[in-house]
Length: 265
Image (cartoon, rainbow, N blue to C red; front, side, top):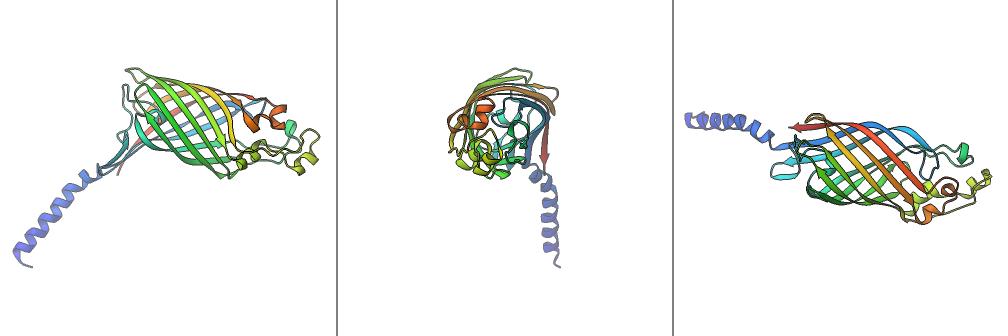
């Protein structure tokens, strides 16, 4: 192998080895995971509450070369810290919701059991320092196999130490398949039940409400998040025999411990 060729090859190899850490730093993924407890309706339209575990996953930011969205360096102390869902920016974000299983016993005697549902989807948001608007669509990948969505807005207060208060209106939607799963009564269910007449709801607006939330950082990696939300069922959902026996008013509170992750690869 000629000396010039060997020299060039070694130089290229050395440059590649030295450049590898720099290239690795151009790829980053920041996200948050929240786990805690939730007190809310035992099922959609229920008049009684139950205590259940809760969890949430949020994307804070991503960077791949020149492509950057959100905060790929993750939250830090100060006004830019906080939940991934309130990170300043504009664009697409993930959407996730879990609905607890429903048993056909007690007040729902004769109704079919419903397993746990997990909804996955995407949302669009525009978040500034002091306000936010967003919308999202979710598909019942596990469970009801219907389509649900939400629209919302927030006024946001951020302290210099990272504490965040937020609140604003909410609206929930669902297609006919989603509505039939949680608010419908089939002929067979009606025949088994001494309470519910057959009912086949359609899709559309299902609830409107308001939510208040707070976030308190404990460190750059840890924080406590809590919220209180009131919804009132509307449209075909409100006319369901299940809701007529339960309640149109749905109050939910939750609190959880948040861990922020910042991965570089």
